[in-house]
Image (cartoon, rainbow, N blue to C red; front, side, top):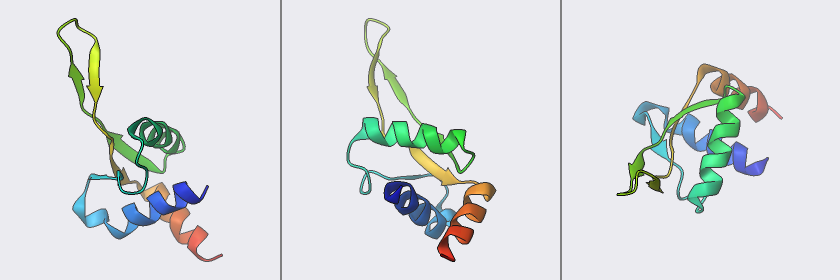
Length: 83
């Protein structure tokens, strides 16, 4: 849960920048993608991610996700910050 809070705090403080990467918080791009999907399902963030196709039509590379905090995520972070 601390990773979720760290990500939300970073997005909250950098919300004027729009979509940002969290590679300095979560070094593993696969784990970052999994966490981003979970947080998106909860409505806390929105994210975009580029997928690069290989020559055989399969995904050969998925870039780290770029995230932005949603109004629900702002509310959740502000209420969590009170404790």
